[in-house]
Image (cartoon, rainbow over all chains, first blue to last red; front, side):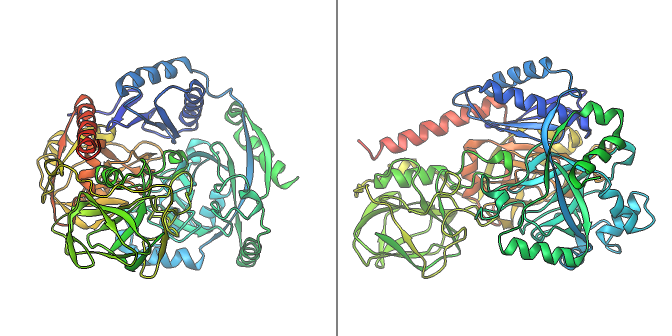
Amino acid sequence: MSASTAPAGTLYSHGGDEWIVVQLDEAMSLDVNLKAQVITRALADLDLPGVREICLSNASYMVRLDPDVVNPAALVEQLKEIEAQSTDFRSITLSTRIVDIPVLFEDEWTAATVKRFRDRHQRPDLTDLEFGAELNGFSTTDDFIDAMVSAPALISMIGFVPTVPWGYQLVPEDRQIEVPKYVRPRTFTPERAFGWGGAFSAIYPVDGAGGYQLFGLCPAPIVQPAQTLPDFRDSYTFPRPGDLFNYRKIERPEFDEVRARVEEGTFAYRIEELEFTPADWFARPDETVASMKELLYGA
Amino acid sequence: MALRIQQPGLMTTVQDEGRSDGYRVGMPPAGAMDKFAYRIANGLVGNPDGLAVLEATYLGPQVEFTEDTVFAVTGADMPATLNGEPLDAWASHTARAGDVLAFGFLKSGARAYVAVAGGIDVKPVLGSRSTYTLCGMGGFEGRPLVAGDLLSVGSGVDGTPGRRMDRDLVPAVSGAVELRVVVGLASYRVEPDSLAAFFETDWSVTPDANRVGYRYRGGSVEWVPRTQPRGAGSDPANVVDIGYPVGSIQIPGGSEPIALLNDAVTGGGYATIGTIISADLSVVGQSKTGDVTRFVPVSLEGALAARRDAAVRLERARASFSS
């Protein structure tokens, strides 16, 4: 039986015989996610026998392996070597893209869901948005929304159900928004709901269970199995690890207009290619974010 | 050749080995919940490995064969009949055009498998014909079968009627389930006494038990108090969102553990305390609401030994009917 003390550093853990979960840190930070991105890329480049899949997570990563090909304990030793070889995670340059993600906050669909599952919430007397605002010290929900759209989110993990992007906002740690997940997960969340759990924003691609606080609804899809929209021609999934999602508050007319374009098959995301060097952001966070937005929307 | 679904049963889906790729973008494997019964069903009818079958949960379907073929039924003890005549499970049989396969009430286990020579021929989605129930992808139109569905069957396999697996190799299924677990992940988050008690508790499978996951009731765990790390959220059951292995056990709120299974979410923000070993995932798939379940800690070496034992059992079972 494991000790009940928190791990001092990286925790290598066997998930049964077919998985290894590597927790690089208990806490989330941009640094730890950059570390996970560097290690998982190095691991992929090695193309080790028996490694079936490499799953990037926020402050961790996971390996799905074939124990008939590689001994899980031996693989952990290799993973430790890879970790020891990687040291500098800020001066990397991520070739990525910044994407405009319109969000209708306080929409009627997520509002109905929020109401339906009050019995699973910490504060049944508040909406999720009111709860998040109060918890993070905002006097109004509008101020809270402004903070959520103030800087883009780095996609630090993809999963839950196909294509859910976890977004870690590019603001200094003292400005990070943080909310708990529901006490007990909901059994329903509407398709394209925008939410927040822990320090992460997320979009629910399809109807399903979920535990994040729900704040709004996106008009545009992030998964499209039919692959008819221009952004989905090459892949049924839209988000990629390392993307920068810039959430933008919209009103109902724009929501309806985007929905119509999605329905007629003409919608395309506003996207700009970008070379992101984390060291720049660490040195000048607000200026770096401002120039990212300028690149996306023009001066 | 096709299967015409006259009655769908409670929850019947098309399944195969499942997806081997896509977990990194959130696509779980899906696939047969009881891989042993699934593989034997294919073997009995002479199918190559990996062809798709029907997985019927709790209550079997009523299925008409539109042409002569060979089929087999394995898995849960759910007495099968062909045109009303009792039929041996774990054996392959000839069916004539118009014959109807039906099932009686479930006696033990949870999931029965029906393999047909040539396999169920739905269009593969992302490398597999398996139905991913949580998001409605793959399989037959991404959903459980309904009356009136007509399922194409592949050609190119003649079928091997009259095969019969050795009775002694039929897995024992009872209402008392033991699942071996490699303890790890965030188990350090649980008070040691409480973690020990977790493995001494008689857990009961709740009605919330399906291909996505099984929820259990019967006890609770105490979390080690801590200042929550940045990004995790304030509830002690929360962690910074992390990947979930198939078979991993999480305990949202500290009560009602959930074992995540073939169609589960691939990651999230609840602390997980360990993972059911691959050799026992079939056992979960044959457990049902109300079954008493014990989680038993096992070492990695123990998990690997169990995996080898399972492979030997499968080979022995296959050898018992194919020469």
